[in-house]
Length: 355
Image 1: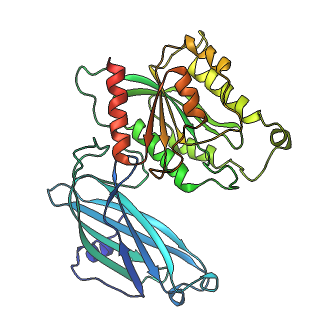
Image 2: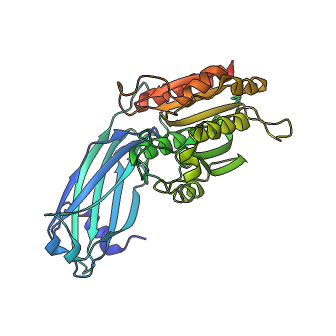
Image 3: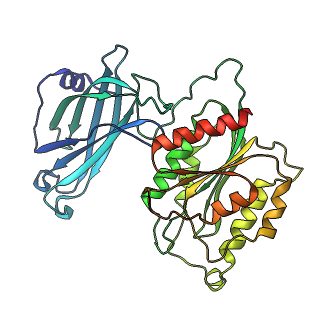
């Protein structure tokens, strides 16, 4: 809820600064979830922080110039105790997502003592004609919130898709999950989840470092991202199983078993997918998946697509373990470095399924 006093401050054309607060903001950029993200950072002086720390209340209002209701986003941001603040400033950050259009943004931050810092700005998002976006024009939403999917066009066929999401590090020696890789994989999965022609989902999330399936759900009308996030929080990449460490073929056997199970499901499986989409960063094994092991996959009729996230165009141009397996199977691999490449890949997948 937004109070009347907060609404008055949002309506005011003048900025207010009861405490030292500097706002930095960035132009909206297209994310791998095929929505435009607008980020901001509030920089506070350590001397301005409460002695014991506390929570700052945030209110952001964005109103499309084309008309329609304004969207209010609220949040509670935690600041550290004054003595624990490091550096010259303390940053509180956030953002929101936008569809193409022009917007008026009114921003408000209230400190634990009841002081206010406000700011107002205009933002313009230009549509990319090369990408079918996952958000409608003149629309504002939380950055990672669940968004409704567009309606399916009359007569369009919907597909049951199985997603294998590899939440692993490209660099295997890291003791923590690389946020860049994991965030990109999660955003790509969100883009798949918002595609209206994908009607039902079977989702499998796994981690190659732990050689463990983190999350699994079958034949659901939507992906439960909350449950998926909770499952990812259980990963312990810094803990190494000695038996797996001593067995150089352990990871290869895990990947072979995973692909065999999900690319060639048993006849008893109630609902077979129309396609399998594998999403993940490049991951290399000491030994490749044996070709004879891949022969077991020939009985599956579901086409397989590999959306291989590559953060830099020229990094690691060679095919990884999953890509080699998909090639042996006869599937399709797409290198995903930009959101535009993801949008084109999804169009190609739907085109192949229609045929």
